[in-house]
Image (cartoon, rainbow, N blue to C red; front, side, top):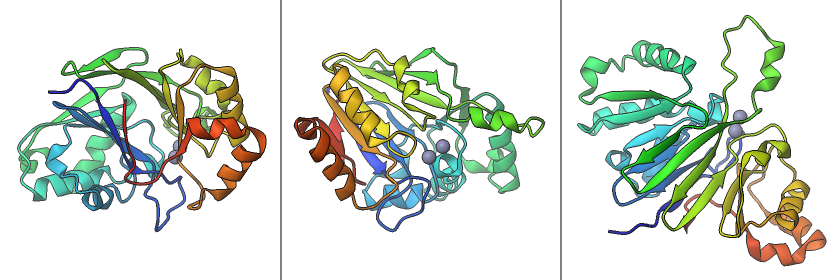
Length: 259
Ligand SMILES: [Zn+2]
Ligand SMILES: [Zn+2]
């Protein structure tokens, strides 16, 4: 038995579909619970490509309901049915999206009575620390990524979008989720042992470099990449903060890190 957890990057692309990067998602792997963070279009194939079996996934958490983060979930549940899953599947989503997901499953003929396994819906509560069989904890923190949709009242939209703080016995990992601006990262209490996984679509690389210069952060991993080729990012970092290069990793699909 090991106390450390691993992060498997199952997708590192942005909302833009790509032949080289699946949409942004990762698996938190431990000895006794595997939690998938986000499930955009193509997540089932992304898992197959990495040799991760559907039955290995104990739960899925959706950070927010943009299609690149949730639209593969119904297909993933269909695959679990086809592979005769029996273990319950935990689904962590914002409160108002539980009924939406149930409706979507119903209309997609994924009837809970016929699945062969239980869907255990759990609403995400801001600031509440969830424990995953003693191997790691996860605290969801609301960010302002979806606040722009407040300009469209009356459409029944959910404005909840989450950043995540994940703690294990051997280290902490913070995940930006999709954000609105670098200010959204101020919720995290970084220390010299922290790993930050941050998206790069709504935060500039310059802002990431500033963070590295100002805060005690062991390592920053860049994901949710708009471009397949990271060479522009690398040359920007090399030009303005070359000593930062050793503390920045540009993620690719299949990258595994230990926390
Ligand atoms: Zn996104
Ligand atoms: Zn988004």
